[in-house]
Amino acid sequence: MIRHSLIRQAVFVLAAILLCIPLQGNSQPNRIMQQKTAALLGKYLVSFKSERGTLRYVLNIDSARGMFFYGTLENDTNYHPSRRELCRIKGILAERKGYDFIMKPDLDYGTPYKLICQPHEWLLNNKTYFSIREPNIINGYMLAKNDEENRLYSFSGMKHDEPAKQPEKVLVSLGSRP
Image 1: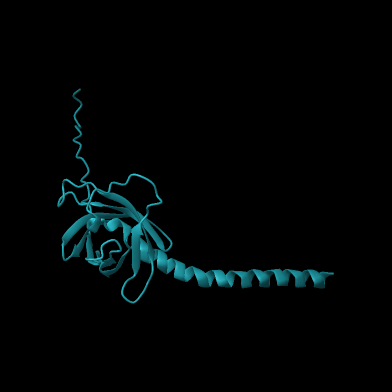
Image 2: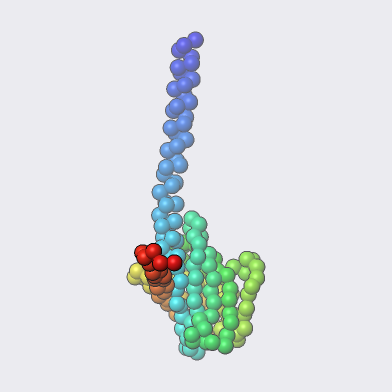
């Protein structure tokens, strides 16, 4: 009886060890993917350049889960004050030869969307392929599906760090006067 219970315990321990080995092997690539997408978090001042001109946007990547990242792409009012464009974006880590990430609009997310622009400027229905080339600098390209005459856009952006707010100074009187 003792022999059978020892064998049963040994089998359970061995099975538990064998079940844990594949989990450890799979967690390493997931951790690497999470580190790469987490490095994207922040606010970027980006531009889409083509033969017709340059369009400037603010890209806010506010969350990353595994190999996916999410955020917003909105018009940069410093360059185009009269336009108010806004769209949610989603992206994925997709390491290929020429790029590391793919970003596209998340039209399933819901509202608000404000797309007031010409069809050739409506960048928000196209995929953007980009990489982190230097710390805080992203660049790549976008192939426009909706503009046959102007299909290739150059994409570049720089991370914009918000200045740290200075704490308010409070003067405290040590005197006993009311």
